[in-house]
Image (cartoon, rainbow over all chains, first blue to last red; front, side, top):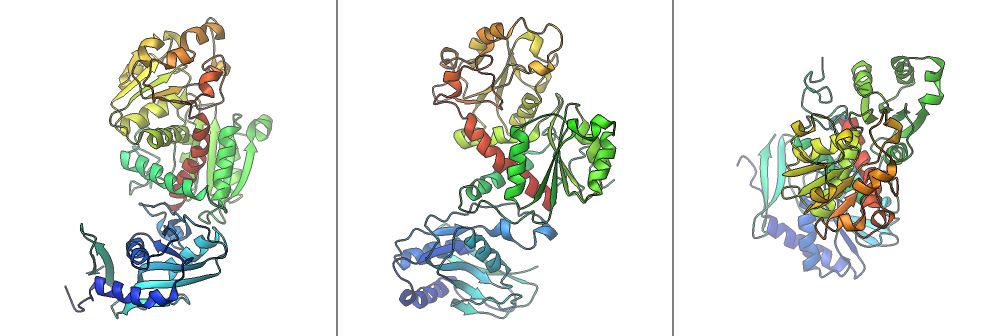
Length: 167
Length: 319
């Protein structure tokens, strides 16, 4: 593993839980973005004891790189099992980078209804924004190079970890 | 040539550029289409049933042969992908004034078409068009002669997978007018590629193509024998408009021997499902009590057809 030792994902998750606990209510809707964001959202949903069922988004149909690279091979199904209209929502993703995924996710959400508010939780903010997007809940901020990829992994026991790879 | 010469629907990277036939399409591409369609089923259950993938694209429905259901589901699918859709029923347009197919297509391409959905009574017509369009244009075969109807085959596979989960232990019967059926050919190719171990075709000798066994199917002339123990019954429409000569004594006789009735369906597995590509001839190839019965999945087929066509168009337009 070169250069930067990545922080422990489980500790970052705990930090997110601590930040979010005072900020969520019984009617808050939590929505993970496939795939890493859903893993984190599942853990947050459990730890924060939210009673609204968990939502999941695959933003493939809303991505702005479709014209360039086509449709993603492995499209998952978006599933929002609650009414978005008039609800406070929190989007959850693993790594916040350019902001383009979050733009796509917000566009998709509005096709389900008009939420009262959307906030964003990210395990890692790696900077490099290309759109005016910011997260309200952040596990940690890291500085990595353009060639670096940060990937969230989940083992058989459900433990989360971060992996740094070079493109 | 930038397309694969052995399979002109694939580009040099092995990705789908046109959809002309299910013959020769690898299993991973079929599965990619079915999986993507699954995600579109979710979209079609939302408040806003549209996604922006094909925004700004022009999709031309080129129907040289009449069709209501297929043309409509392609139109709905394209609109749900935010494309602009232009419908042309060519038999009442330029062709009747003597314009050639390729001239028609060249004129439409000059109107900045991005995709052609083609139905034609002549087998191979979509291939002809695909060979002559500019590289950025995609062609989808919506049924050509007796040859192929790939999106119908795909929506049938989607329907089977939806109810039966996988193909690896299924017995499937295809019943009726196999000779004239592009649907049957598409079904046989797709089922074989997806690993279905036993495909039976059931019909009178006059309505079976002479080489049909070479496709790896089992031939039955006795419908009662052929339906025993099957998981899926795929009925076909008796295509009276394609009948030439004395292939059949009468529709009544066909119904007696090859019409799907409750007592014949009882020979299949109790949880067998019944498919039909439509439009149905009730009382000819299928009895109303079966068509409207609990084992019928004929209306879900139509709904799934929209998701399948959304998947095909969005995969093609992105490649």
